[in-house]
Length: 287
Image (cartoon, rainbow, N blue to C red; front, side):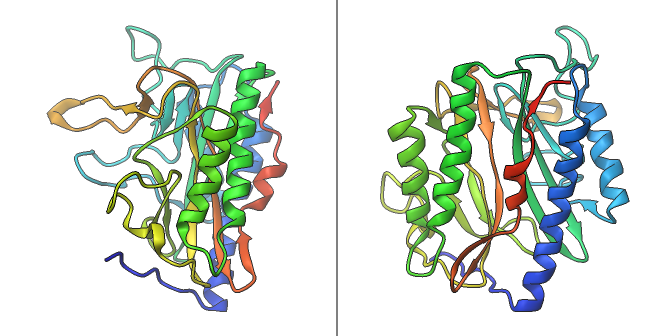
């Protein structure tokens, strides 16, 4: 049986909102600062400075799970076919350790996780360098629209299955793109990951997703995050030294991907999006 989520009271909801707004502010500053020719280490350094300025800590830096080494960066920075969990040092020039510069046509997913006054904020947005091609624009639009439709279903009386149906129906049914398998959203609060797991796709066999039929209870915090690729929902990762799994997750066929993530508080009146202002950001970088 799935573990029940922790339900927030009004004071805790205010603290969660404050942390989510810190994430929004970092993204707001990033959107103004990002420019062609920047490298991932430079972006990560910029994020570190903003977190310090906002009296926050990264909840990603040093994070450990499974067979991975501690996460080495302040933010998750994932370029093109890297779906999620890209590190500041992974994107280098071929045959060297020199950081590769971002240029027109690059699609960059930036996931910011903060801890502020004991509470987590965790949200990702996708930025395109230069005017996107029609296909890339459609891919980005599918990410934002599927997230919007999914969030609408996070209300009392529904289960988390309603979220997945809305997201998958749009991405795979209408747009003919592919949701990444095996990855999804999650509860959070005073820890980065907590019940429930929120899949972006409906289960295909009994027991695949135990939280699917769990009710959306008022007071639940969830970070929901469609991850979408053009060519496949399958992924691959590389092996590093000491048989450790390297953090970046790539599309198996090398196709472009996008990632959008909101923090949401389920209330008696429906979903309250704590990071709603991300939708107002300029996400095409032309400077």
